[in-house]
Length: 555
Image 1 (spheres, helix red, strand yellow):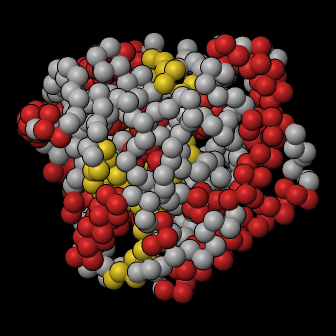
Image 2 (cartoon, rainbow, N blue to C red; image 1 turned 30 degrees about the vertical axis):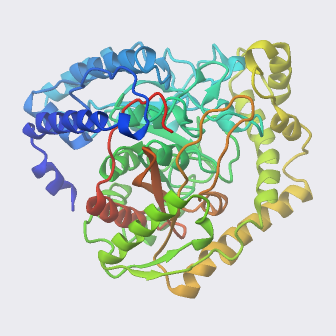
């Protein structure tokens, strides 16, 4: 459905109805929990904005039921009740002291007749590796960057502000976007501590966009922004019952984001519905002369033309069509199955739904090179991390707390009692030992990765079977957080799309032991709009997401 149809269907009365229905559903679900061996902590008070969508919020703003200021106050209060007290999921690392002033200015614009679009006056959270030129810090969760306040917004932050979004704070993350240690606990940072999964507080939110995932799932914001190098949007989205979109590399600018690796890094939306995610993606996309990958106007125009579009504003919302899977050829990446019986059952049910919506299922449709570039992926990330992070830190100027990867390594050693309580920095040390990006070892590994993930990988299986998209389980039910041993990731899909720089969308598919499980839709470069169409059709047919109950544990 098009933008106008959504706007017509959004009515202020739906806000109260939705909130009441969600509250009844959660209470009924909790009433049955003891029989399943679930441990229930005191439940937070009901929240008027639980599960509310961006269009419903916008309808409330239009009718006068809400103001941007009232929404911002409600979300800030909910963060205090749920994130800092109560269940204390610890997903927000810093609040924006100017949030209410920004919201007030938004309301004044609305009164003057200027509404910038669907995000005007909508409170969102962003990950703490995305620069903001305000009174908030940008630290990637590291104590080494405490006090770092960039002099300009990241390009995507500029886009969000231009769209009228109210950035109410920054989310905790796996420190340095989970690229410090190979034995880390996702969701932990030296500055922010450990983020907890709101579905079961003893379980992990997955990383590195862990705070964005947990906060959005817990209804602490309308939606959020995460970043991904390999799995860091889609895994926390799956583990927290969200829609997460990792767009094709080049659609979203990377400038002003603390990097891991320029060949794979991208930002993307995390939201409770496909519609909300694409509204956010639409705001993020754009031509940025400051980012080499988007810094060619012809290339940007070519990307849009490849999707049959004239401008970026139609790349996403035009794809929202409930019948979008009819006639599509969908391949099942069967080799990504088999790591969890409950997940397999959910995936089989999901595939049956996709087939019932008119898609042709091709099963199996395995990526022939899967697993053959894992070692070279790490090699590339180590090289690029050193080069990209040193470049980023140098651009912060002489007043920055640290100026190089070596400075951070030394800082961590001096502050072991605060920064290395649970795991070390072996990835930092390996990256520091790498040479420049002109090294033959780096260039050879990068070429191999692109060849195996693209022409001989995703493209090959899609050509062979004439596919429109591939599907796989995004991940399993989240593991219990374990600081002694690190993460216990059991299986799922993200790597081929991440290494190729290709789009990947995860959508809630079901629950295993009360924990969310997502299904991934992915495909060729620049197939973002098509994948959105498939994801939306699946979501509308299943509608499985339910809000978290803040369990202490599940057995």
